[in-house]
Amino acid sequence: MKHFGTQHHHPELLNYYIQTVQPLQERTQPMGIREQLETAAVRFVRVLWCDNANVIRAKAFHVDRLAEHQQHGVSISLAQQAIPVMYDAVAPNSGLGPVGEAWLVPDWSTLMPLPYAPGHARVMADMHHAGQLWQLCPRGFLKRMIARAAALDLQIMAAFENEFYLLRPTAQGIEPADHTVFAATLSMDLNQSVINAIAEALQQQNIPVERYYPESGPGQHELSVRYSEALQAADRQIAFRETVRGVALQHQLRASFLPKILANQAGSGCHLHLSLWQGGENRTSAGNGDLSPVARSFVAGILDHLPALMALTTPSVNSYRRLQPHYWSGAFRCWGWDNREAAIRIPTNPVLPSPTHIELKTVDASANPYLALGAVIAAGLDGIERQLELSEPVAVDPGYLTAEEQRQRGIDRLPADLGTAIAQFAANSLLTSVLGAELTQALLAVRRAEWEFFKGLTLEEEVELLLERY
Image 1 (cartoon, rainbow, N blue to C red):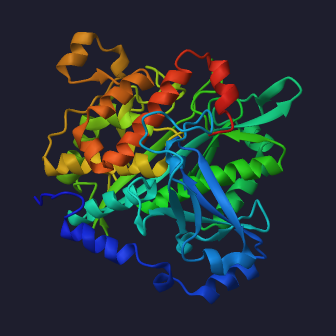
Image 2: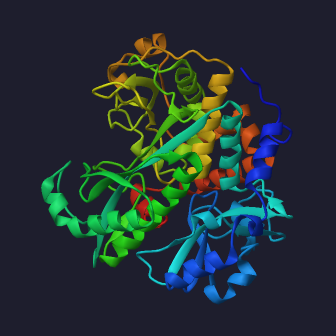
């Protein structure tokens, strides 16, 4: 088994940077970009980033200023990576402040006219500082973890599976767009126009739609998209959140991915689906209906680090209102075949090959997809490098086992609040190492500020502030 050096000195990582983080003028053709913008009648180009509070933000430039912004993008304060979700002020002890600029350098391969915002286009950005990829760039972090996988001759394929609520503004506040139950065809009929429009807008952005059904909550829906390589999967997650919200607005609705909106109704998860590929072939299955040895170690690594991962995969105080036993949300550290109560479910297929992927349920859409996916990859690769043995699968609801039965089977309750997850993350040497000291410091500062602000609030107070942040 190969062993990594540091992230700064491993030669394969260096080669990855040389090959991927090149000057934009070497990767793009100026006339091609201008022609795309002119053909789509674009007036403003939104340059997007997702910050450490997991809020999607953008700065836009007018198409007439393309020559000024094509190579270096647009600038933001370094302190933007220290802004918590509740206000535009720098979190204490972040290491960041009013001095210094980062540049949002467009990845022009992601340029996309926005079907729901005619005249505007979107492009994903990498954060640069002092002429190089900034260590605090979440997208850059995911690229580094993809390179770590490549050094083990592995490619990670992924997809985020979103649940969200469609809500209608009223004089009394918001209310669900319908009051139906799981998979009700009435909900499909009531919401046909907006769901069709969301699906069409995604397809127009080259995001293949796979399946749709109304979820358990009133006005709640699930729309799944096709898997892709890891960086594109995270980019698609940003585009998905933006598209659902933008199209909903066109239909006089509000869309929210907030994990828990209604106290007595289902919360919204964002399950992360992963598969391991090698030489263009899916290596998740052993070929006999079981996980392959490499997949078993990968899953074991995720489970080993999961309490700390939750500061990135379920990073909101609100996340933990959803993560309750018996709610099919992944509140226990264990895995199982087709077990929706386990943190990791291995879905089976009616015919071989099976399984084709793994599903991490302890994720929601308040997560920054680059940080969450990158950290999960790092945890899984750690399991491979350490050749961790996977525990026995759990075929029952672990919440109904006694404490002694859970102990004997190596099952434990995952963190029940963000404060506990933050402490686990801060103490996790693998995750803090791969993220790097600067990114870890800023992340901890943001999370701790959010925890201190929100921990005494009611659900209603959380929802009032966060409903349209996520």
